[in-house]
Image (cartoon, rainbow, N blue to C red; front, side, top):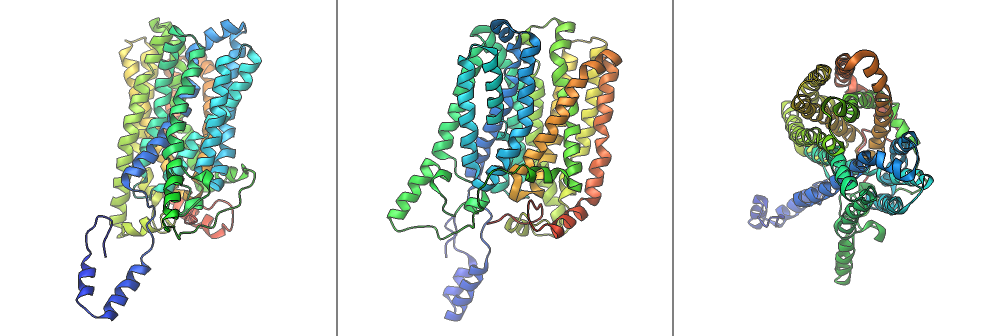
Length: 518
């Protein structure tokens, strides 16, 4: 018997030298071995997660690339700045609502159909935004743009859940989150350059080109990963769930008489149900996790929001220079998320070894985490990040209060971006661990709560700055952020019990402890 790498197993050599009974016993033992969790190779997983990260990057960049051109757009369309700001508000509203529908749809119909719907809406809206000439069209098309691209991060979380086990998920989630967090850093720079030298309409043509690059490689190469559709990746699926390359390969295999015998009982696809997303919010453990995740990002949102006005006032920077100041924020976030992913995988394996739990058990059935303290394995790494990030927020506020050199607050942005977003990545990974069979719907719930808190935080920032000053404002923000520590400790302490209670009473809907259907 040959393995994938072509090497013979020791048991095979013994069987050749023994009786037919031994051969029969060996074959029966092999037949009892459970199927692999995913048929995708390591390089295929890297490509799939890289594509998901690219989609997340496009999503996050789209909301920030528009900011440097706000004044120019208002002037060209002859409307007030307040009306132009409404196009930002409407984008944020649909950014929170849209994933609740598309996330549930992706868990039922598959990742590829959901991506196709998203990018079709996104491409059409960007073309319209580049060509429109009045405010009403701008407002409506910005809503459509948000509906189209906002679910991309939730879909990316679902893709990672499909192809990874809990033991390796940290690294892949880290890379996907890093791609998404580069968007807010790179977006303002690109938007400022395009608006300055080519005009604000060039921003939307640029988004059409970037989305087109993703769509081409997606249609040709990216396979369906949803476990309810293709199981571990080996089950046949409908043509709309197949890439062009996959369709061609299956057609050739069918012509030669080779066909996969794997089957999957597929769920009935109906109208997307946002109630499945809300059900995650009102669970004990996941409710606290979602609240903690939203609080973690308050300081990140406030730091991003204050840069344009304060940096212009203190340092006299123009739009392009202000956009460049976002780069440390994104670079720190990307580096920290990738490094944190490696730490999560190490800590998972360390705790499994300490508890004498073989890793192959979690590889075989990653959705069943009963008896394993997954909350502890993930959240232990949050507390150093939370401490350093909160201190960086305090320093950031006081150096702005005293008007110190530009390099000092910009350096603090690197630590704020790195620590807060890495902590956010850890919480996201835990959420996927708890809901492996419905990861997109669970990620959509995180997106919804995060958008609510982000909108509230940015709305309250200016009154706080005016009433308290920069130093005390960001000191308060840091203290609110650090309040997360007791909440996360409660999840570590009581999370396994709450998870077991949820699994015992869950007969339908989203179950965080049940293994993925395959």
